[in-house]
Every structure is written in C-alpha cells, then in structure tokens.
Image 1 (cartoon, rainbow over the protein chains, first blue to last red):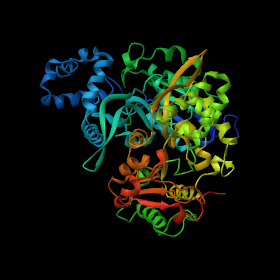
Image 2 (image 1 turned 90 degrees about the vertical axis):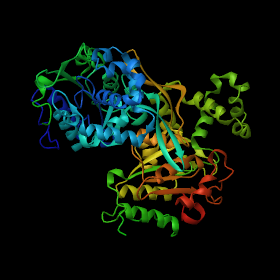
Image 3 (image 1 turned 135 degrees about the vertical axis):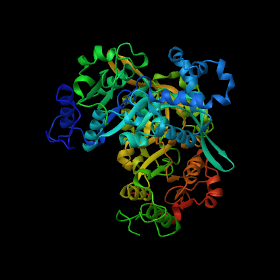
Image 4 (image 1 turned 30 degrees about the vertical axis):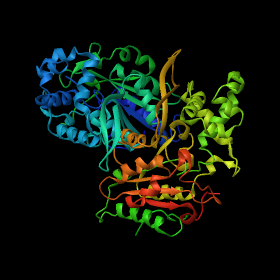
Length: 309
Length: 309
C-alpha cells in the first residue's frame, strides 16, 4: 500500500476500522486495481455534528441559539411568558428538549432570520470565537475529532473532494468550516432558510427570511447531495440514523464504496450515546450497518485520541 | 503583465473588452497589487445560454423538450387537443412562444419528471449526442463560444474556480458541462425540480417530481450563488437582463470586480438580438451596465471567431 499523507491516520488505533479506510483509499487510487476511481469522481461526504465535532450535550448551533435568545430578550419582553422562549430564559433544559421540532424551528427563526447574510456571518463569527464548551472549557472549534481530521487529510492527499452534508445551518457551518476542517464554503451543504435578494438605496443585499428552505437530514441528505454535487459520492461518514439514507445512497452505487459510522461509546473521553439519544440516535445504523458492509468506528476502541488538544 | 495560459484570449480582438478582462485577472493575481485576491476567493460565475453557448432560435433545452414531447406523444393521445402540447405537435412555433411561462413549465414537467435522476441523465446524454442545430447543422455542444472557452482557460490557469449559474435545468446542463466547458457537475447551478429519495425493493433511487424547486433566473441567481457557493464571486459573465441581479451582486462587492455582458450583435456569424428578445432580452444591462463599470463585449467587434469550428 503506497498511500500519500504522512503520518496516515495517526490518531487511529490498528484495527478493522482503520484497515477498512486505508484499504478503500488504496484500492480506488491504484490505477492498476479493478476498483480504481478517477480523481474527479473521488467525492466523500461527511455529516458534521457528532461526526466531525462533538454534539453533546447539545449540537453547537443550539448553544448559539440559546445565547442569541438571551441576548435578544431585552428587546422582547413578551418572551418571558411565551414558549418556546420562556423555557430558554428560565434555563429549563428539560422544557427545551420537550419542545419538539416546532419549538426548535421557532427558536431558530427568531435568531437566524431578519438580517442580511453578512450580518448573520458576523454574529456567528463573533460567537464562535468566544463561546466555550462547558465540560471541556474550550472553544467549540477545539472539539473537532482528530481522527476525522486525519481522514480528511488522507482523502485530500489522495485527490478526493470532501463535502460536509449536515442538518446544521449551512451559513452557520461556513463560518468555521475552512478554519476547522480545511473545507471551503462551497463544499458545505446544510439546512437553509429562504433568502431574498433586495436592493435598498442602490445597495444589493441578501436578507434571511423566517421560513425554512431545506431541512438537510435523513432523506434530505441524498436529495441535497444530488442537487449540489450532481454525482453519487463513493464514501460517506456519519454517526446517527439521520445519516442512514446518505450512507445507503452512497454505498448502493456500483464499484468500491465506503460507509463509516462513528459510534459514541466513550463517556470518559467524550460521550456515550446511541439508541436513546433523541435526534442523535443510532439504531438502524447499528442494526443494519454491518450487514450492509458499513464500518462501525468505536471511539473507545478505534481512536487513540479524540480531540487535537 | 505576466499571465499564465498561452495563448491568452486568442479568439478576442484587441480592444477595450479584452483589455478589461486581462487587466482584471492581472491585478487580482498580482500579490504586490492593492487589488490582489487570494486563490480561494477567486470565484467566477457564468450564465450559460447566450453566454457560453448559442441560445437562438430557442434555448437548447427547449429543443430537448420539443423532441421529448414528440417522442412521448403516442403514449398521450389526449395531447392532440390539449395545450400546451397541441402547439408543439402542430409545429406551431408562434403558438409555443405565446404560451408564456405557465405553458413552458407544463412542457418541462411533462418531459423532465416522473423518472429517476439516472434515467433522466441517460435521456439527455443520448439526445445531446445526436441532436443537431438546424442552422449550423452541428451538435449543440459545437455551438459553444470559443472566446468564452478562452476566458475559462485563462481563469483556470490563474487559480479561479468557475461556476455556471443558469436558468437552465441543473441536471440537463451537468450532462455536458464537463465535456463542453471543463466545469465539473458540482460547479453547475441551475433551475431544479423537487426530487424525492425512495427505496424500492431495497434499491434507493432519486425520483424527479413534477414540481419546481428553484427557478434560477433574475434575483434567483444571487440567492443560489449564496446558497451553493457561500461567498460573493469577484467576476460575473452574462448576456441578458436575467443576469442583471447576478452582475449587480457580484460587482457591488468590495475590491476589484469584473462584470461582462456578451452583446449579440452579429447576425452573420451568430445572431443579433437585444432589446426585443423576449426572455433573452438585454435592456437594463445595455442602459445601466457601462455606468456600473460593466464591460459590454460585442460579438461583432470583440470576437475574432465565434465557434471552435
């Protein structure tokens, strides 16, 4: 095996998961191999929350939402008695979790819309530079997974183009994707809200409206992959049943395919959650993944280190 | 000026348009110049119909639609008496043009939906390989503009990433964008219809539904640029008022900007049309473009040759 990139998957322990990834990359990049794939078709897709960085106790974007609600509350006295805002301002975590999808969408719209794309990017940029994860007391962008950075580096060194395909907001992720992962804005695909082009006093702007455009989870992932990329990737990495359709779509194509699910089973170094994890639950993936040829990467067993720090 | 790519804009005659393009590229790639732009931000966007290839007497995709209606007619006897299909089957060109947007959408849905993305790609691939332009008696993919291929080559040699931003169907264009322009599928943004992810007998597929998802014209262009690319391009090329908002958005950004409108004024070698050209009309661009610093590229005066043949 003559793979570029040195050291190769240095943060992975020797084992079946590491071998599966290295073997796949070796086969599709070996011009003499039956599984060879030309560089233009070497497309890999990655979920973000729980796959590239930590998503517990809540996805990072949820903390941004909560901080924004608190910051905006003085301008919205009615929020003190109005759900879903009341639960946020009361610090009622169980109440927030009980709000369901409609409550979450209302919180997102109250904090993500009614401003230009540039103003929103500034808000996110300022927040991500200063907010800290409570347990690890570090900026959220420190909580990227070193083994996945290794995978991204290995793929980059072997002429893959890697895309993020996440349920998170596309303009939220783009504020840090290049710095955190080396993935440029145009290779980030996420959920999006309606955006309108408006010219005011001769100045054009894009204004974010309080209306969902695309929710990029479950079946929405292969749909968005087709819409944005226009061909079927050959490798997919996820960690929850929200990624099931994406892995299914990618690994059902002809030729060599790689599907990897990160299994969060390490409460000591990160978090342990799977079948009962709400929106982040992993049930079908664990039950059906192995028979579909997918690799289950155990954080406890397969990752020599979790974070870069 | 030390530009890569040799010969540089060989199909352009010396003149203001050629100078404007070469000068812009020289400035943004010169690390010592105040207008320098790092490679990652060198994004250029191109309309397709009438900007990269011929769009007269009808956009190429319209001919695909008409051919498909005729091919499907035996399975649809009701079309003989039903508009918009009757006008197509009667060869009533004036009638087709009078159908307006609703009629065109009905024709598109009847020919573009109700099949998998792969089946559609096969249909388009077969058609584009065999269909011929009536006047020039050549495959449509021969009717790309050599001067614009020169521009794409110049930008590629100078580390730009070029995207197509067209009102045409994204999956239609992707069937030839790589071969015709060297632009990969993931850098093609167009109009799209709703696509659904379906698993049938264990086989996943993406099925095209008869419902518009995004119409990528006028204000829809900057919106789609933001959604797909996530940053403001620094150069934009178009040819009609459908491209006005895109050029406006691109050239309103800070720093060096390039806006170019191709002016179809050469009936002898191609076509002559502008203010009265229906969907392809160019009015505001001609009236306001020069004061906005946009370059009007005259096919008659600025292009030494039009097509590669």
